[in-house]
Image (tube, rainbow, N blue to C red; front, side, top):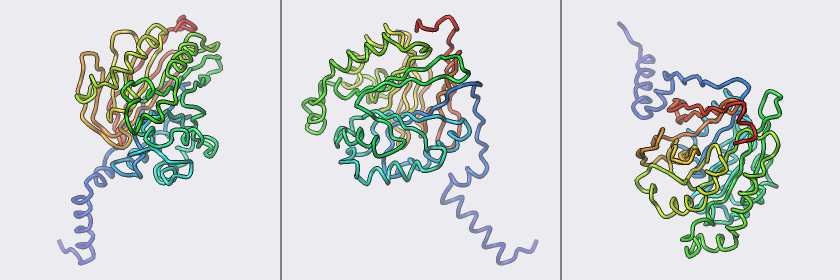
Length: 334
């Protein structure tokens, strides 16, 4: 078979593309899995540990988030902290806002509210600048270092999901003597925050069917580095006695650069979404339902009867799907 010089150049070009950029070749042939989302659900994406000027898969995860957000008609996003590496932002004019947030998460499907909490890396800069950016950006939502929000579930039933966003940094005693975290931690009243959370969880708004809490540091994690780390144990000591007795449905965190679902004793489901830019080692505990060292995010779909969670990689692969059930008579009791 005769091959012209032009055809030969094209063939060589394609071979070089596949050899140099294998992910690009896979992207042309890979079929993205269709999501199994229940009808009449409120859908949101949770991501964490991301702001790196686009480096280390931040761009790839953002691109897949845009596709998933469009397919699932995502209503909002939750950032689980460590929003800007390595040392937070210095002000509302810090270039990080443009190069790590506005320009990375630019597609139209990502132009929804971003409800965010502070991570330890954010405490190395000016945490209050992230609060103040809420008045600069239409979509960045951080009205305080901790706050609560309720969302109506679709269907006109009047049922709601309540999400409490907390600041876990002041709950870690070791941070107070840390040269970088200390100055911003010392200004916080951890007792007042826990009293506030207790009140929010016990005095739920009428119609609240699901109750979620979001913080940066996990209470439980399967990574070798942090499963019994000082920060993990400190947050567990502070929050477990608040979450379990108040029948919180799920606690959502970042900090560990992985995707996880854990169900320890106590009745609260624990999810970790901290690999929106970097993925690191993770193992499994006796109560681990799922764990993956994968770049990606979690998609939550909440309806009156169930909460479905998808773990999705930067290539669009559905790594895990679970469904938490809620019986009709549970309304107002959990």
